[in-house]
Length: 362
Image (cartoon, rainbow, N blue to C red):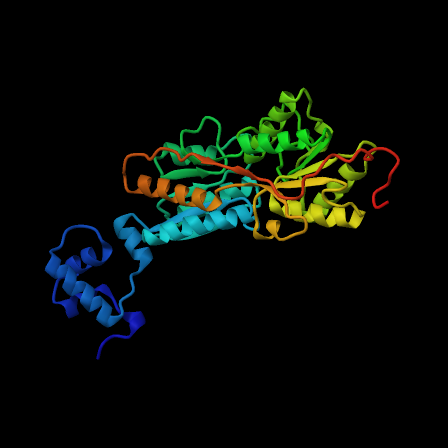
């Protein structure tokens, strides 16, 4: 009687194929050398018996687990969701499983995630680093020669392959469009935790995607002879309720902003809810734009102006860079990925009444 499916071992396959266990292990594990004839007999026997490889045993014998670890900051963020689709599809086609870890943008949870993945003997890492003063866990991986690709965020001073989307130019174009429409008081809202709830030139965040958004915004303001107001560039929003509180403050202060820039689509959704609650229309009372292009952005009324990023391509590029490292191939050049401005209907002229005698909803 043939062994049951779950009990099939390499020894069973070897007996059915009529070859040694060592030859069978090499044929099924993809290491060492076996003849084409032996390989064919082993594969046929394995299929007939329903053999399933023991991944743990294979990793012990070969030093490879055929898995990669991906560490991201926020699995709810559509940017990471779509980029993960690109990564997972690319890794799967290459025969790798993906172990995903979500850190909630916590540097400590990121350290623990790296340790956990390392104990699971993953063959390589893709990491979107959390904001921190130091990254010894990533420096240790690089120093040990472990395959590592940084995603969406750079680590200053760390020599590692990095996939970034250039958003500075599109951010500059977006801000220039607002300035041309008469806007002078711009609000910017982000969840980035940078040690302060207000942006200031002293904050060292240019290596982050949010920092690059702000850099483009400031460059456009300076070109127009204007200055950024640290009071209206808000960081560290903690969820939708906090975003709504910040939006309410920016929109109803003595000198309210006439335009809002949402750092991602989750912030934009919360901002739209709060503006509706305040009775402010977009773009009649306040203009709104977001960095991200979720499917709903073109369906709301008015459709949102967005800075669209090649998110899927970024995920694919990160996977290809890591695959090249794990295969010992020559390093691939970092891809040039650039965001682009998509102008829709959520930007209008700056209303002259804002900050004067009219109250929201009047």
